[in-house]
Image (cartoon, helix red, strand yellow):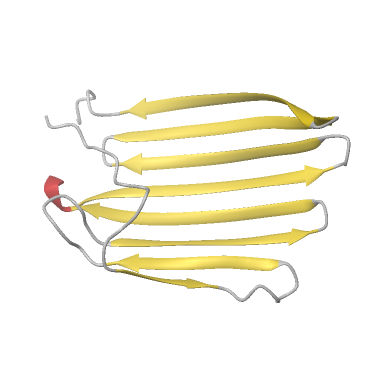
Length: 139
């Protein structure tokens, strides 16, 4: 069985994107669509919306991409993340889930940044769990 490769997160050809205006009370967001192009790239649809006010920032995002090289299989990503800056400590965290027909990868992370003079101390924890049903026999 051919392994499904993750799509290219850096860019998509022939895409159209929209960014929300920056003056709507801390709400921000963007959306993007891209046409199928080339031997492996497929149609992409994604978006993100968030809210930032003072030391608080939170955002949620979702995307789907068809991988044409693998019979149009769907690659789906969902994530949510946030941060709060206490001044002496900035706490951050996120949860992400990526799905393809045979696998689901769940990631979460908690981290912090402490300013120290002209530098910073960074500490964090991240965990990932891959659920694969590619070897399971359907009954």
